[in-house]
Amino acid sequence: MTSQSYSVHPNGICESEYIGDGTRVWAFAHILPGAVIGSNCNVCDGVFIENDVVVGDNVTIKCGVQLWDGVRIGSNVFIGPNATLTNDKFPRSKVYPEKFAETVIEDFASIGANATILPGINIGRSAMIGAGAVVTKSVPANAVVVGNPAVIVGYQTETGEPERVTVELENKVALNVGRCELWRLPRFADLRGQLAPLEYEKDLPFVPKRSFIVHGVPSNKVRGEHAHHQCKQFLIAVHGSVSVVIDDGTRRKEVQLSDPSTGLYLSPLVWGIQYKFEPNSVLLVFASDPYEASDYIREYKQFLELVNA
Image 1 (cartoon, rainbow, N blue to C red):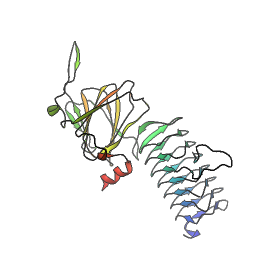
Image 2: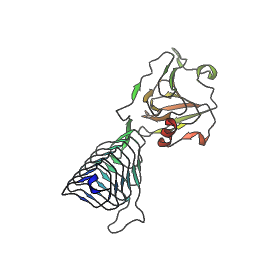
Image 3: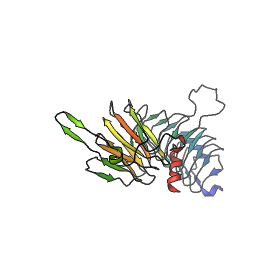
Image 4: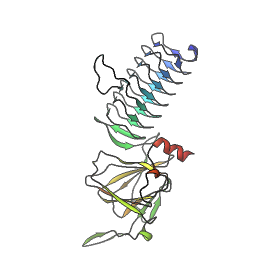
């Protein structure tokens, strides 16, 4: 690369030769020699970037941000003013670890102003970190987190929050995410209470070979975060309420389950997340196949590669 392929303000310092075409480095920014910066990036006033840092293309780094050794940033990432990324959990003056922890911010993620990112964690693709959040654990793809410590409060697409689906239906409704559907199950009510019976061959989309119960989940915790190659699932909130995000790699919707007579059919190759558990909620899950570890897809990046292949 030549110095003519990018621009540096007269009051900026760029010691690195690894700067992509179209990148702009503004006043009082300082980039050390080993840093790698992609194309069309905007490095604003007062930014400091250490040697062992890699930044992708089309990244915006707003004023007052420091990127320390071990930080890896994907493409199309936004880092807000004065956001802080750290690389040492137990810092001491003049005492250095053998290797600094690696912090990864994946493509399309956004970091709000004054957020703090602890070392050694992963911020997933398209995640949104709220202003002032203190992120102490890895953040899943598409999650929105706020607070100190940061907790997940929602999920979104690149253009906003997923469509939310109500359960006011009579039979079953296709959700246009994979082959997922909402099913209305048999229910009976009289003075003695309510009854929700199930005949597996008649009332479910498949005959289950396994079932499990999810309960005792704190309201700020998240379950699921995976897809299956072959296994089908059917989810019923038998008590309380839980929100389920379904994602086929192209479309994403959020369904609230709060009625034992309503079930969600989760088809294979759909990423599923359960969160917003009300206190004492109980989620019953039927599975079409016995447990098989190799059937799980646990990395969102791998999931996107499979569904887009």
